[in-house]
Amino acid sequence: SSVELVGGSAYGAKPTVFGLKSAVPYTHTDLLRNVAFGCTIGSMTGAVFGFMDGMRSAQDSAVLKRASNVAKGRYLLQGTTRSGLLFGGVFGVFHSLKYGVRCLADPGDVVEITFASAVTLGAMSLKPVTRPSIPYAGMLILMDAFNIYMRDSTA
Image (cartoon, rainbow, N blue to C red; front, side, top):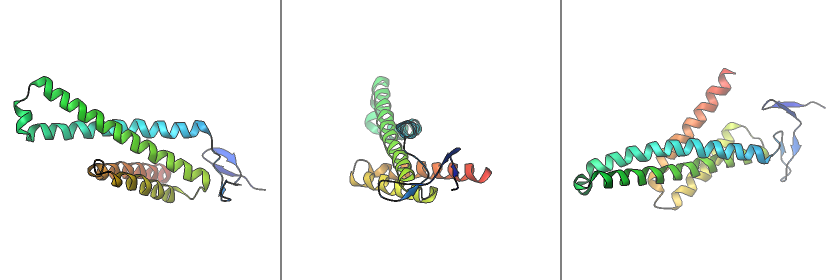
């Protein structure tokens, strides 16, 4: 019987819970690593988006132009924190879904990214508060997909 090399480890494709074949075994450590990566990158990116959006809003708002520097700083901090938490959660969920699909069926990067992004962005579209952030989340997912493409094409 042949053994495939997947992710640097030798595992044979084994049936999963749903009867599909996957050469990637599930481990809590790998799930935690994927979620931590998504949350970290997402929160840093979201904080930058939130800060930039807060600066733009502060410049355009007549009320904030008359506010004290402390009030302006508090407004920027709230927007940065809110956006960082949102994107950290969204990208963490995206990476956990991607890992789950890989463990259940191992269909390849394109299917993993497509499924995880459809579920993640679809969930964001349900709440009116998160809808304006969908283009930014899509851009973050596209950057991740581009990174995977570049990593795999240079190997």
